[in-house]
Image 1 (cartoon, one colour):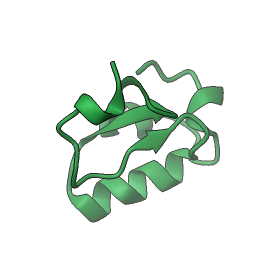
Image 2 (cartoon, helix red, strand yellow; image 1 turned 180 degrees about the vertical axis):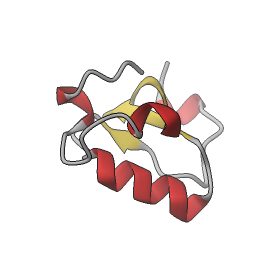
Image 3 (tube, helix red, strand yellow; image 1 turned 90 degrees about the vertical axis):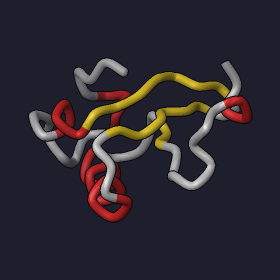
Length: 68
């Protein structure tokens, strides 16, 4: 699925290279518990705040044991 087909126009999209602390900060800023994960124009999945709270904040999304 391409990113252009997703209804997330007003929310930031997370890349696999983003750090956990950055994603958590965006979730807090936008007051959401889930964000879309993309790689280029490809939709990878949805990441949940509760999943990130159990991961080292300094890790990138792709290097952690997180499943989108």
